[in-house]
Image 1: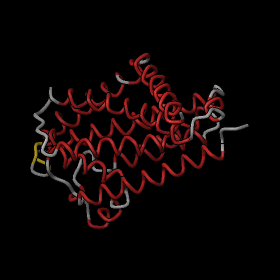
Image 2 (image 1 turned 30 degrees about the horizontal axis):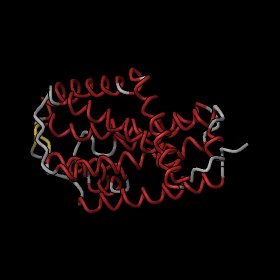
Image 3 (image 1 turned 180 degrees about the horizontal axis):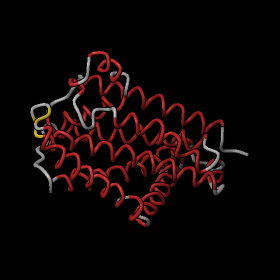
Length: 257
């Protein structure tokens, strides 16, 4: 039956991805943990003492959701772009494309793998944050749903990057020149209410702002944006990116030589 073939194919892709993540855990999980620890020490502990409260919370508490979200975004995106481009570079992605698996199963398998890494890193960063401050989750369902949706969105964005990349240097362009600036300007370290009115309006065009604040609302119960807008933004980006990925896989653009 088709569903049995699809399920077997999906499980195989996910198992391969998770095995890859765990096999090179020193590259996939440890570096984000070390980086976030440095952020907690430098920004939260040292600089935070001078800043004081932010949004009614201790500065260390305020940046915890942003740092967790930043680690999940970079890990989900990085896992997908490196894994899928590796399959493309090694020419074994062609075996999947000519297999009886539909494109949505291939996409779901790789996205689940990226999601697994994002959740692993996010959990590790959350545990690390407990050594620096107290974290009380106000809306667990919102926290988890925003985290999952954000990880899925950036996993699919990573696939688009991997499909169009022609060499390993190409997969670093988007994270360096687009993803990193948007993340730092997405309210990870500050409340946009502190910005002049003009820059608040400019920040409203940054989708990561809504994701960070949606997650912050799930943990702290405060947000600079309407939580409903956050879900709409994530939903729209998710649908658009899913359609784009499926179309690219169907046409074989950048995949078939």
